[in-house]
Length: 88
Image (cartoon, rainbow, N blue to C red; front, side, top):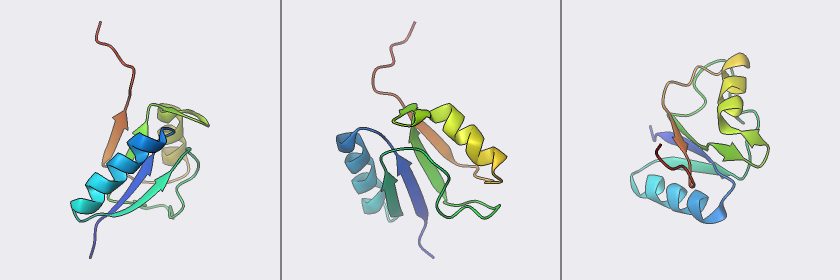
C-alpha cells in the first residue's frame, strides 16, 4: 500500500516542490492551496503525513490543524512550514 501525503501551502512554488519531493520518496501526494477539511477524513487518519504552511490563504495553519482534530481526524504525523520565520 502506497503512503499518502497531503500538502497545504499558499505558495505555488513551495507546494509543488514539497509535492515533487514526497512523490519521489514514494508518497501518493495531494496538494492544496488552502486549508479546509481533509478530503478523506472519516474519523481516522486521512493521510500518512500532513504538511501545512503556518499561514494559509484561509487563515492560520495551526487553526486549520486544530480544526481537523475537532472534526475527528486522528492524524499523528504533521509538519508545519514557515517561509519568513526568523529565530529570536
